[in-house]
Image (cartoon, rainbow, N blue to C red; front, side, top):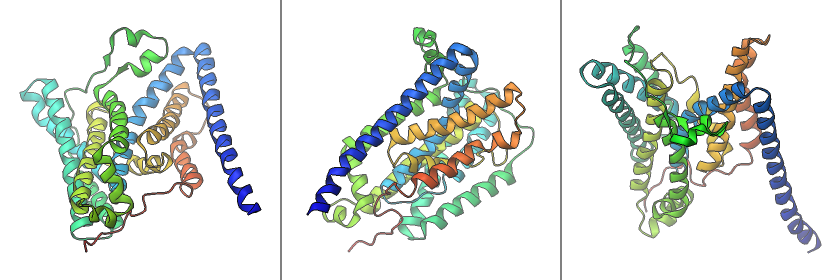
Amino acid sequence: MTSTTVTTAEKPSSRISGRTILIALLVAIGIAIVYYYIVDPTATTSVLAGTIRQATPLILGALCGLIGERSGIINIGIEGQMLMAAFVAFMVNVALGPIMPLGLALFLGVVSGILVGALMGGFLAWMSVTLKLDQIIGGTVINILALGLTSYFYVIGLTTRGKLPTFALGPLADIPLIGPVLFNRSPIQYLAIILVFVVQFALFRTVWGLRTRSVGEHPSAADTVGISVKMTRYMNVIIAGCFAGLAGAYLTLESVGTFERGMTNGRGFIALAVMIFGRWTPLGSWGAALLFGFATALKTQLDFMGLNVPPQLTGSMPYILTIVVLAGFAGRARPPAAVGQPYESE
């Protein structure tokens, strides 16, 4: 009795302690940002704006992963989905650019990337739900397939006519520091931020979200009350693929403006780390994506400043951060109970 009472009493204090540490960390980061903005406003704004840019494909990839895993399907094929979508979006824009207005060609390129992501999501769902293959193998197949096809059909020298432009949101864009960082972005960057809050609300405040989480936690109980486990998983993995497709289109039509072999450069796997760090929640994943994006943006700024730092060291910063996060948080985060488990209806 005594030991149980002591243990129970200790839990609230540990929660308060963790919350206090988090608040203190956020306050320290805020103070540091304000200080460096006063010292060098141009560099500080550049790093924070770069953080949003670098975090965009990561949070879209993380949303893809968490929607799938919340319904019980592991998706390590995010990298392949993003790469294939980036290639198709680029090729559609190259093909349509000379024969139609630039804005329409870019829009159709983005749509084609989203559709390719959905198609590959359906392929993963078919392997995982219908064929009941090992879901890790299914994701690996997608990664290998995407890398092989994009490398084979890639043509050197192709370029788009342009990229998706940035849009300033009126007077909001003139606010010091915050304006250029949050209110002078390109369309997919705005959309990614909006989608974080939309998915957060949908996942925890709608019937779809309740059914998704029930299928990922206890599919047999969901089946008992009339929820189609198979249909829910199919639908969610296809929807999740749309997010990965949008991330791929972002890379070629908004971020870089061209396509290169393997240009996703591990972002799909980092998105999985972001998802785990964010504890399978959109808002938590967005915070983790901003952390990784900051590491990448800081690396770029250090290179630009010409500091005497080996490029191998600065280039490895985001990946070192990935390892640290997975080592420190993966064991503490609890995934959905039925994730990775094929379901047989009784």
